[in-house]
Length: 238
Length: 42
Image (spheres, rainbow over the protein chains, first blue to last red):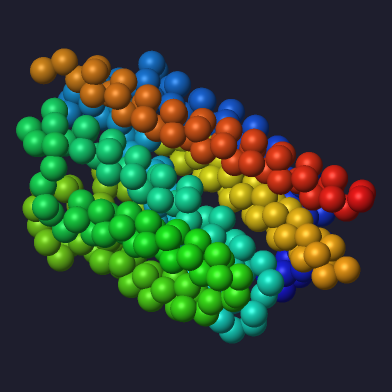
């Protein structure tokens, strides 16, 4: 990880990597979502609405993985003061917030035909909503800190402390048994039939690669802006 | 109940959001890198 902490070295890797991640991600996502919409059979219990699974599960994963990324980057900023760590945390925040919001929206829409309600204050839904609020707070806090033009360790501390919501989201379906079903997929087993499940790894991996491409693009944008600002400051002093 | 309007709404939100953030990030990156390139040449 320390190898990538140098912005010049990071850019030499990120520039060729960005289009590859984007295009492979788009291809895998198209396969996963296309198959989920047109090829897989309807579920015997949920009917056609099970097709929302191929979007809802990857967006939930990205919402949680995004904050894990913020927490790791913030820790690296606090411990090693890596110059890229704060940039990485800020770059993850917007796509992380977006996918958390999409997860909540698709979950709410899926809930209407399945549960008969758009929203229920159950453990999983409420903890995901709190994650969205944490993302919004992080984006606002980081923007305010950057405007002051100084490295703010409080933003990084917020990134680390905020990760306390992740185990709450994960275990919420075990701690509070309400409308949201328990875990139906793990790395080793699944309670979903293979004929319905198979497109999910495509959309999961595809959207993850797209997420990574967006993060790299946002990091490149921030580094380019920092370069312009530094140059302008030098020119103003001269 | 017809489930397809719900499915279509989810896919429009998901694909639209993904395309939107990709396009926004790409345009912002191209603009920022072009500006950085231009200022380096000065």
